[in-house]
Length: 120
Image 1 (cartoon, helix red, strand yellow):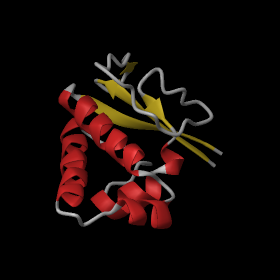
Image 2 (spheres, rainbow, N blue to C red):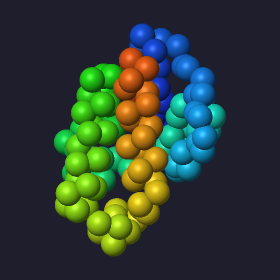
Image 3 (cartoon, rainbow, N blue to C red):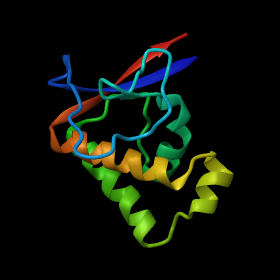
Image 4 (spheres, helix red, strand yellow):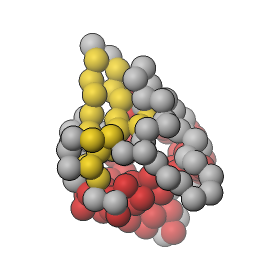
């Protein structure tokens, strides 16, 4: 199963990302190239669900994206998640975690929804 995620404004139009500085370096998917505000959600689904309570297979609102970023930031600043735990439990490194956090906040602040494309 493929689970690709992308950010859309008003639930219709893909938006171009206009990152100032370094673009996030995240897993890509079958349809997710990363250049259009997309990423391979299958790689992060378990981690995001366990740490934020949100399932990447569902539509996520801008408010929820900002809440996800805040939860992730709090876990990091309060040392409730460590780089070792990210690697051992989720097979993700700290930079990926920070990039996801930054991505959620960035698109949440642009009033985008996180949409899902599932292919079986």
